[in-house]
Length: 339
Image (cartoon, rainbow, N blue to C red; front, side):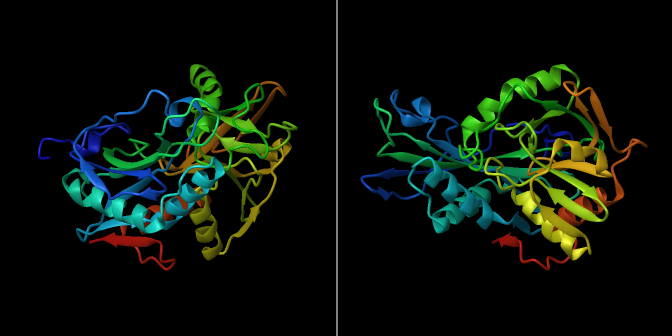
């Protein structure tokens, strides 16, 4: 990969050499198979196409300055895929098989892992979908699990910069007790109208409110929301919010730094009381929020008034990224070396 400019990589898809695949058939999983094709053969009546039986994960592999490749909390991604599979009645991927597929796909595509210091990482996308044919609305009897990788550049090319968000009231990402807590494609499809509207208005993303009362903060585009005030890290809790591995980690880091933490319902009106706010997820780690606009209530909530991310937000960001890259000790036991 001598000709690849690692520091100019987009956060997008690039072909790599291999992906890993496995099929669940006749009540059991087969063996992992290696493929060099970017394409899949899929039955025209597959439930993944017709009835939304599809779940995915996203995680990264990091090259340390010691030349070792690190995975961050992959077990949590494996457990979340189990939860998603159970939530929409798919065959669950065993955690050990998930791990074997991860390690194999990383090792086979090692030349695509961006070097330490480039700001880029190897993005890993596990995917599970109903590949069995059904015309009636019911779970498939066959499922396909695959994992592909692609090198991606940093979400913020010029360093972490605050972004503006738009509150959305006319689109619901997920219903209460629906699929919001699972990482399934339907949630993202449901969010696209609002996200596109936000982008067209010059905003980085949208903030969804709860579908029942439009009273509480739900998700922040495809990420979790957090606010900081009085040395307390506060993040919403509901039955329609995806349990973010990044958010889970930030909570523990905040506590280790002497901050208080709260996971609870967060009313829209509380936005005015936060000193810092942000969105967190695998892609950006943290996107500090500069301004939140609520057009229906004619309200603008401003943070980062000097144009720079908040101090506590950056302390949390820097600590998490340092652990992921192996720059500081990992007291939490989150990092796994890929041998």
